[in-house]
Image (cartoon, rainbow, N blue to C red):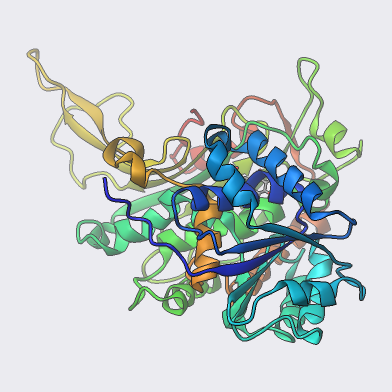
Length: 483
Ligand code: BG6
């Protein structure tokens, strides 16, 4: 089979925070996978950078170890692994001080695309950006990539934007939301804008409501300190779930360019209505069967941070007025599963006998596991004995429908290659992040001012009872959280 992978030009990628968890788990394995399929050329250079003194050999050994641990491909492709490691270098840099920058400058090649990946604390975004500029390392050909959290609220996001914009143009800034790199999320755009079937139905006249669920089975073990300052709202809703909502709700952009797409997403965020506290359910998982509670993991016996949140969101525009979007996400739930359900209205007049348990037409976009799209239809139950209805699912699982060569890649792989290509479509623009915080902040202030506490919930379920009620009281129900 002919590979459809198009190699990118040679690049120099400087990875700040190169010894950190994200670099080891996602970024280095992601680059390696692109190398194996021939997308990252042998002439590319990856320059790991961190505060600690380390010889090149030691960093190469660390990279080898990380790849063997986190990439099954690396365990199978020893020869490719060794060739990949040839592209690796290491420079010790003091992010906010003076040391190391000259050495880094010398390690980079003239005329090559430069990407600076900041897998570090946001407090270092500003200092690193400034140092890159002041030491003449950032060229017009350079890109800077920043990880979330992008701010803690609107004010801090504005500060981060200002710090970056002092030294880089918006066209050079790549704010990562790894959900945008997930295959189904990108497919949402293809589904909506490359087909004529769905667009006539994609509005409040035909869609009863939308459910967005991002459920995780793990708790916050090990990340308690960061998480306790964030909670599910800041950690997941302000960014990942917001992006999903935007892609479902946005108007068709006139072109598939980064700014046309992002312009439409910003309009959706600006159209989000304020949310009453009665439309928000927050939860916190409790201890069970010897497993610690959220508070144990967070290290604060009085924490009121939510590890689960469900919200009813209304979009105040012509397309969506009257169609609520229900968002929910949480830790320690029954399964790790993420999906979007577009639930359609019932036919206006039913001529058949009532079907017990009928749920009606729905399109389910499954993000993980088993990425794909299914469509729930009502049919006549086959066989004799009267006219009974049954529900069946039309299934388009990507793994079945596509060849192995086109099998979904990890979100990071796609996004890093987009950085090198200079394509910002799947990255958040500064105004977009700020708009998302502007909507999020008052909701958080609302529950803080009212002293509202999250409801305890059992691990392994679907969150607090009140989350079910959020839909029940309107005659709707969540889809089950299941693998
Ligand atoms: C991260 C959050 O952005 O996304 C984590 O900080 C969360 O708390 C993770 O677990 C979920 O990502 P994924 O790709 O595993 O669904």
